[in-house]
Image (cartoon, rainbow, N blue to C red; front, side, top):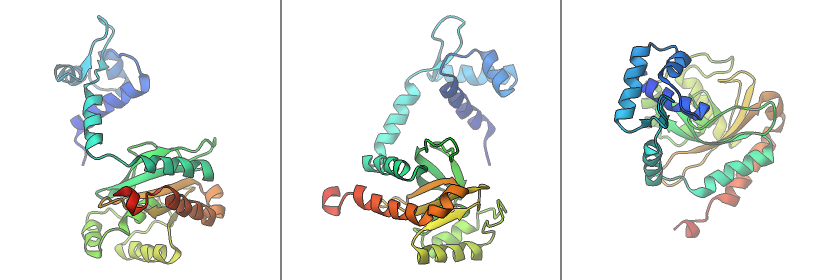
Length: 248
């Protein structure tokens, strides 16, 4: 369930990130198709809380640095190791595909760091991108880190929709795919969630954090080289992950 007012606040900040300039009440309202009155209430509330200001008279609103200060404080409290970004950057460069670091978010998997492929035809993904945890390679690489009891509790919350012809649409089907993943040594998906998209993923636990890495791209390009991609991923993890004595 999405709370509309909360979603609208986030939409406003994403809008400013796109336009990168002040915007008037009318411009924001017209962009989203919102009533002027409710748009005014949202913008004025954010201004009163110190998240928006007016850089010049009648030039419109723009975010203050307050949101950035909060985001930095939050990030510093639970930082990602620097080597994880270097890892996915190398994976994207070596495979020519989009690489991402993924974490669980309830019944979804969320991309927390992304390096997109430079190819014209590629998997477009951004930080914050969410996919079903059971229907994707990245998500199933997270599920492998759950205990059977934890998975069963999560399965009761999942909407087993048929996203594609190969989507696992039952608990038994997901569990069967996890067993196959263990046997082959990696998780993979070919059109399970997104049509014509292929991806390979590996669990990447860091301390008590459940994470996974995924390399994904057009199925026609990824399927023939999946074994090579997984080999590159495993070697890159060995190369980048600090040894226990270095991490201590």
